[in-house]
Image (tube, rainbow, N blue to C red; front, side, top):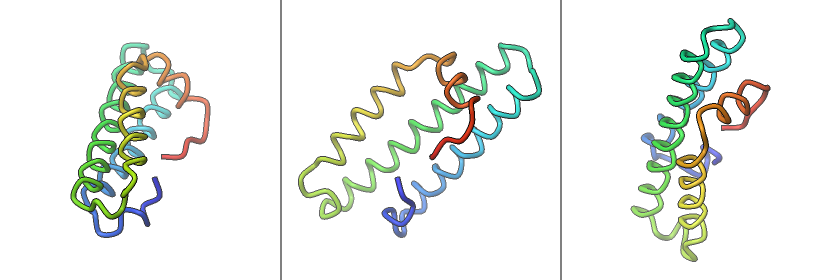
Length: 103
Protein backbone atom coordinates (compact mmCIF):
# COMPACT_ATOMS: atom_id res chain seq x y z
CA UNK A 1 0.00 0.00 0.00
CA UNK A 2 1.23 3.41 -0.89
CA UNK A 3 1.87 5.55 2.21
CA UNK A 4 0.25 8.51 0.42
CA UNK A 5 -3.04 6.60 0.51
CA UNK A 6 -2.77 6.46 4.29
CA UNK A 7 -2.51 10.21 4.62
CA UNK A 8 -2.42 11.08 8.29
CA UNK A 9 -2.90 7.49 9.49
CA UNK A 10 0.31 7.34 11.46
CA UNK A 11 -0.49 3.92 12.93
CA UNK A 12 -0.49 2.25 9.51
CA UNK A 13 2.62 4.17 8.45
CA UNK A 14 4.39 3.13 11.66
CA UNK A 15 3.39 -0.49 11.06
CA UNK A 16 4.73 -0.22 7.51
CA UNK A 17 8.06 1.05 8.84
CA UNK A 18 8.15 -1.76 11.40
CA UNK A 19 7.53 -4.28 8.62
CA UNK A 20 10.44 -2.87 6.63
CA UNK A 21 12.72 -3.22 9.68
CA UNK A 22 11.64 -6.84 10.23
CA UNK A 23 12.28 -7.67 6.57
CA UNK A 24 15.75 -6.13 6.80
CA UNK A 25 16.45 -8.15 9.95
CA UNK A 26 15.38 -11.35 8.20
CA UNK A 27 17.63 -10.61 5.23
CA UNK A 28 20.58 -9.88 7.51
CA UNK A 29 20.00 -13.15 9.39
CA UNK A 30 19.97 -15.09 6.13
CA UNK A 31 23.00 -13.28 4.72
CA UNK A 32 24.96 -13.83 7.93
CA UNK A 33 24.18 -17.54 7.83
CA UNK A 34 22.47 -17.57 11.19
CA UNK A 35 21.02 -20.83 12.51
CA UNK A 36 17.79 -21.91 10.84
CA UNK A 37 15.89 -21.42 14.11
CA UNK A 38 16.96 -17.77 14.18
CA UNK A 39 15.95 -17.28 10.55
CA UNK A 40 12.55 -18.84 11.20
CA UNK A 41 12.03 -16.59 14.23
CA UNK A 42 12.87 -13.56 12.07
CA UNK A 43 10.46 -14.82 9.38
CA UNK A 44 7.71 -15.22 11.97
CA UNK A 45 8.33 -11.64 13.08
CA UNK A 46 7.89 -10.54 9.45
CA UNK A 47 4.54 -12.36 9.36
CA UNK A 48 3.38 -10.70 12.58
CA UNK A 49 4.48 -7.26 11.38
CA UNK A 50 2.65 -7.78 8.09
CA UNK A 51 -0.53 -8.82 9.89
CA UNK A 52 -0.27 -5.77 12.17
CA UNK A 53 0.07 -3.56 9.09
CA UNK A 54 -2.97 -5.18 7.46
CA UNK A 55 -4.95 -4.66 10.66
CA UNK A 56 -3.97 -0.97 10.79
CA UNK A 57 -4.95 -0.50 7.13
CA UNK A 58 -8.29 -2.21 7.79
CA UNK A 59 -8.93 0.05 10.79
CA UNK A 60 -8.12 3.08 8.64
CA UNK A 61 -10.66 2.02 6.02
CA UNK A 62 -13.26 1.26 8.67
CA UNK A 63 -12.79 4.74 10.17
CA UNK A 64 -12.87 6.37 6.72
CA UNK A 65 -15.55 4.54 4.71
CA UNK A 66 -15.34 7.03 1.84
CA UNK A 67 -11.85 5.66 1.08
CA UNK A 68 -13.40 2.30 0.13
CA UNK A 69 -17.07 2.79 -0.82
CA UNK A 70 -17.29 -0.49 -2.75
CA UNK A 71 -15.57 -2.44 0.07
CA UNK A 72 -13.15 -3.89 -2.49
CA UNK A 73 -10.08 -2.78 -0.51
CA UNK A 74 -11.49 -4.35 2.66
CA UNK A 75 -12.05 -7.58 0.77
CA UNK A 76 -8.49 -7.51 -0.57
CA UNK A 77 -7.17 -6.96 2.96
CA UNK A 78 -9.10 -9.98 4.24
CA UNK A 79 -7.65 -12.11 1.44
CA UNK A 80 -4.17 -10.77 2.13
CA UNK A 81 -4.51 -11.53 5.85
CA UNK A 82 -5.60 -15.10 5.10
CA UNK A 83 -2.61 -15.51 2.79
CA UNK A 84 -0.18 -14.36 5.50
CA UNK A 85 -1.81 -16.50 8.16
CA UNK A 86 -1.49 -19.60 6.00
CA UNK A 87 2.05 -19.01 4.68
CA UNK A 88 4.80 -20.97 6.45
CA UNK A 89 7.79 -19.27 8.05
CA UNK A 90 10.03 -21.25 5.68
CA UNK A 91 8.23 -19.81 2.65
CA UNK A 92 8.45 -16.29 4.08
CA UNK A 93 12.19 -16.71 4.64
CA UNK A 94 12.66 -18.01 1.11
CA UNK A 95 10.58 -15.26 -0.50
CA UNK A 96 12.13 -12.38 1.43
CA UNK A 97 15.66 -13.70 1.42
CA UNK A 98 15.85 -13.53 -2.36
CA UNK A 99 15.93 -9.84 -2.85
CA UNK A 100 13.82 -6.73 -3.26
CA UNK A 101 10.32 -6.77 -1.87
CA UNK A 102 7.89 -3.92 -1.90
CA UNK A 103 6.29 -3.43 1.51
